[in-house]
Length: 271
Image 1 (tube, one colour):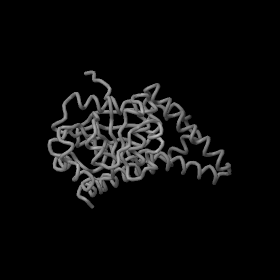
Image 2 (tube, rainbow, N blue to C red; image 1 turned 60 degrees about the horizontal axis):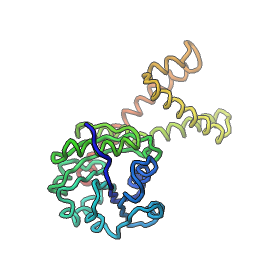
Image 3 (spheres, rainbow, N blue to C red; image 1 turned 45 degrees about the horizontal axis):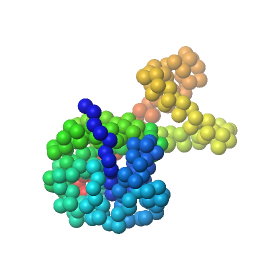
Image 4 (cartoon, rainbow, N blue to C red; image 1 turned 120 degrees about the vertical axis):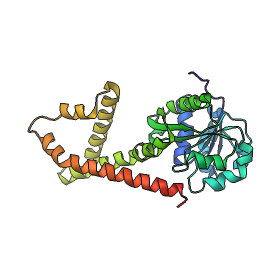
């Protein structure tokens, strides 16, 4: 089902993720800066967008009263209830997207009655329009709302609609994933330095390798396991290295996912 691009988008909270969403929508030419309505208590977070023509509200209440098609709530889950309580009545019957990890649709419904809520879980590569976003609609969200939100986030990378019970797992794997990849790049660079390579040279080559593999897999659709087999010669150096690395990486991936899911549940309980 097709849908129109929204005429305007509000973003409440323009830190790392909210700012990346706002800038990505402009850089992808999905919206003009003048079609953005923003608020963040730290004006430095929105100064560059204001200079491009975005409207900056003086308060969350002023933003909530604005005429936008979609409002993105990009505030930390711990403070979300305090932020939305004073403006909940102003948002009735509007389309609101929450990126707060661990704040489920049931909680959003209680915080924002009569609001068409949609939960999304994006990751930081949306700032270079190569992110991944999971989307789960609330009970009042219409199909047109879901498709509009998906269209917005498709302009920032991959966007997939799924059930809410899958959203936390997506967050633990994909939303946390950029940090995992950065850690792997750092670890491989440190290993190269230990083996005698200059740090800057090694990091540059490792980053180029990671980017090249990701682009190859995306463009070809090849399964990662197949790619591994294609670059691993029998009895060779890669085979020897993978023999040591694979069980450790798999154990770490499972443990990291479990830890992220556990913390998500803690956040959902307000801890």
